[in-house]
Amino acid sequence: MGNRMQDRSVIVTGGSKGIGRGIAKVFAAEGAKVLLVARQPGDGEKTANEIADSGGDASFFRADVSDPQDVRDMAQAAVERHGGIDVLCSNAGIFPSANLEEMTVQEWDNVNSVNLKGAFLTLKACLPELKKSNQPRVLLTSSITGPITGYPGWSHYGATKAGQLGFMRTAAIELARHNITINAVMPGNIMTEGLDDIGEDYLRTMERAIPMGRLGDLEDIAYAMLFLASHEAKYITGQTLVIDGGQTLPESIDAMP
Ligand code: NAP
Image 1: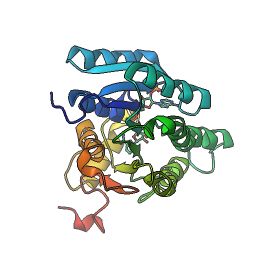
Image 2: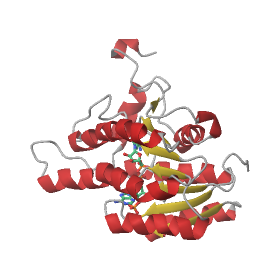
Image 3: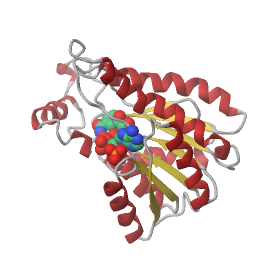
Image 4: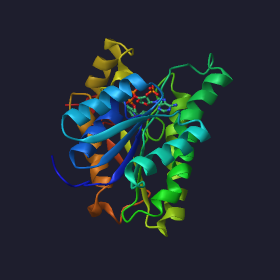
């Protein structure tokens, strides 16, 4: 256990599984008081218990980030349990696949509601408390998909992940006078439960496309988030950090080792 986040109140949306669970575990191991947020209590309570069993401070709060009242209640819960909000990790996201020709308006709207509107709603709900913190941080989980790359079936998803960065850049300017920084990580392919149904073919194809030869793990993202939440990162705002094992670098398949 370290103390880099000692007693800081951290909200991790999508903290019950995958990348969010990794962030929650690493931050809690550094002394943070973590509020894990997701829709399904089962996974969230399991993750909170795992963290408590290893000596960390974490509890679950059920909220849908696309629901304005839910996220206001989430912010209130962080205040009641931890006395305020220092770090918001806006990480909850969904990535259902649908090719453009078959995609329904409902499918487009659902992905937007969670990934993009959810980022706006959670930040807006947490802002009054972040303004009171002495080291306030907002961290977004964007993606390489959308801002840099494309993938068939994910036009709606890619639009939201690129949209998060546009949102971030203006938010960074507006929040700077409150000393609040906001930055985004852009993961490549990270091995999470969200990829469980995607199939072995996809995973093997991705491994061949990544110069480092493997998908990322949860700590690869969590430690980058930890840095961006740290005192040392106090002058970094409105920026992106690609974490993809070099996946976006090769100009062609011939450039691969
Ligand atoms: P995951 O394993 O499917 O976990 C997603 C988390 O978000 C779960 O805790 C889920 O819990 C929660 N969630 C989903 N919809 C929600 C909602 N409406 N309200 C509140 N919580 C919600 O996914 P992941 O792979 O860790 O992805 C996490 C983030 O990383 C996403 O933003 C994703 O776009 C981004 N990302 C992932 C990868 C990758 O390769 N895995 C790459 C680039 C970016 P409930 O279902 O219980 O709500």
